[in-house]
Length: 279
Image (cartoon, rainbow, N blue to C red):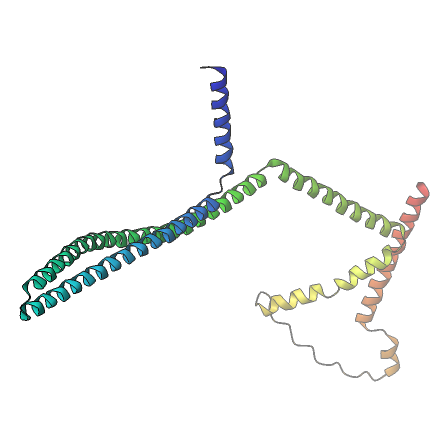
């Protein structure tokens, strides 16, 4: 094979490959349907022309038959008048029209058969075009569905890429580090502001009634015996001064607890000051 033949074959193959890649199924199908509609319009014009020819031949046949009948009537009139020569000429003219009528009749019969076949072919072509339109819509829908599935698969493939998950893990680690640094800064700020006493009292106030609430809940659930009825009131002492001089037990208990808490806080502050002085 010569170099020019190989070059021509290479160019053809590259062009065919380029055309194949540039073909859009939806556009190609739309163009095919458009071409078929154009062919259908042309076929309808041809069938209409054939039908017109058929009607013209039928009309000419009728005209020749009418002329033949008219010359036969004239021949009868010549016979009644006793003019046989004129009657013969009229019959000869009638024979010419009969022959023409027979010719037109044969042509009309053939044309009618051809028109019937063209009409049948036109109906088949129209049915094919309608079927092609429906099939085109189905193929276009399949094409769009396939493109959507391909796009989804490509997206899923991108999500399965480890680099994306590594990025999420790395960002999560950074956020954890920021949260830890924020908590550490809060603890340092609380430690060096000298407000630990207030925070401890706030914690004590939040948890003050938790034990009593828990006991009440257990009694409500039947896990503890019911609360005993209060004892009857004691007799009023004779000497009011002696009774008022002595503080109630509940008040002494609260005062003791408060004193103990204050002592503990003072000891905590003393240790804190020693620890700071040791630095």
